[in-house]
Image (cartoon, rainbow, N blue to C red; front, side):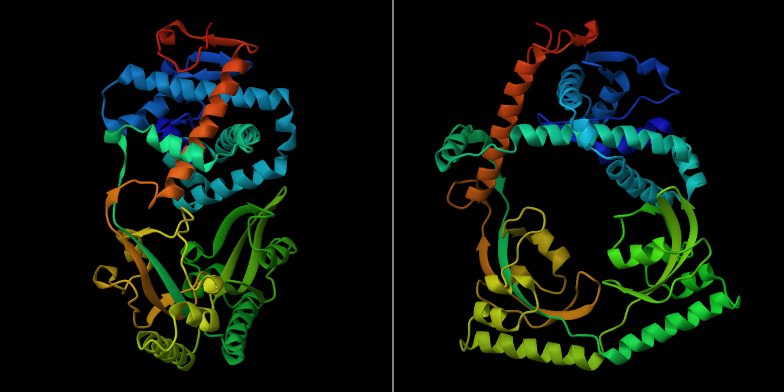
Amino acid sequence: MRKLFSLLLFATLSTALVGQNVSDVPASADEPAIDKVVAVVGKNIVKMSEIENGYVQIRIRQGYDKAYENRCNILEGLLINKLLIHKGQVDSVDAEITDEEIDNNVQYYLSAYERQYGGKEGIRQATGYTYDEMKELLKKMIRERMLSERVQAQLTGSVKITPREVTEFFSNIPADSIPVFEETFEIAEIAKKPDINEAERERVRLELNKMRERVLSGQSQFSTLATLYSEDPGSATKGGELGFFTRGYMVAEFEAAAFALKPGEVSPVIETPFGFHIIQLIERRGNAINCRHILMTPKVSPDDLLKSRMLLDSIAQEVRLGHTTFADAAARFSDNANKIEGGRVTHPGTGSYQFTLEELKQLYPGISFVQMDAGQVSNAVAMKTDDNKDAYRIVTLLRRNPKHKANLTDDYDRIYNAALENAKQEKLMDWAQKTIRNTYIHIDDEYKACNFKLKWTE
């Protein structure tokens, strides 16, 4: 069971180095057969279980072929990771990582696991680790991950490349290895987000105040009311319980009210970007607290929503008739920050303007981009804002990029990013090779036949 959970931690906390995923997962206490020390870098060790965890991930993707070669690649990634950690220790970078930073990260994962598995006992049953064992495991892993990431950022953060270097990078890719990009779409949108009227806000405040009075008078249990009425789907089924968290984990308004409470106390009604809440403190443990809350979100009135829809439909018609451009209309009417860019939508993951059809289906349900031509404008469709409020939007297709082999004209941004990452990796490898000469390195005989990229034992 512990081995299985170690694989989960590997997937969530691993660091990508030299094209391989490397794991900081300590070996399981009940698996000594595979937990021998395979390598030493400075005072940091690589265990067999770390290699096996990484190998399982590759095996899932690629099958069982090249077992030794894959293990060698994983080991080299781990060696470089430990070399970065060693530099961070020598240069005292680890002293810059505060206990509060680590605790915040640890608490984030612990709270997620408590929600996923149903509390501390659920964690123990599902993973084989007690809550305290899990906490110590996460502390070690997160400290090492943060240390290696910071050292790597220091080493490669100043790397820059020129357009000429981008061109050279692309020209050196073998013709049969140039990637083929699927069809992508570039879009723009205009969104109208009606304000919530004060009468609705006051209604929600009164509802929560009534619930608070019922708890204070002993008429109802806070957890029962949370289960019945809270609009936070993540905690309502648990009686509103959020699990332990430290400062910096919640939004400021919520955090200030929660940390001011004594165990059992119920806060006044507070407002956050998510809506209105009442909070009950369950337990305080060091600099972390556990509390329950009831969230209620004021709703936009149907009349205000209808007005937004009618306005957007009229804007769409004006654009179709050529009386205005979509970009000008976005600048005048849109409630989104991208109005200054004519409503052009940026991909949240890549930072580019290109979306695949599958991505658009997820982000814009109700709009058929397959049937749209460039310049065509949709009718107004309902949407949810980032804070889960009702709104409407219209969308236009700016450009359709057909499936094609990568080229510098259409895909310069993607190629630039790949070239930059390659330059950073080259600098990292150069640094590693020089650093190896002045660092104690030991590799187990079983892996000395590996065809490593770097000279670890000479």
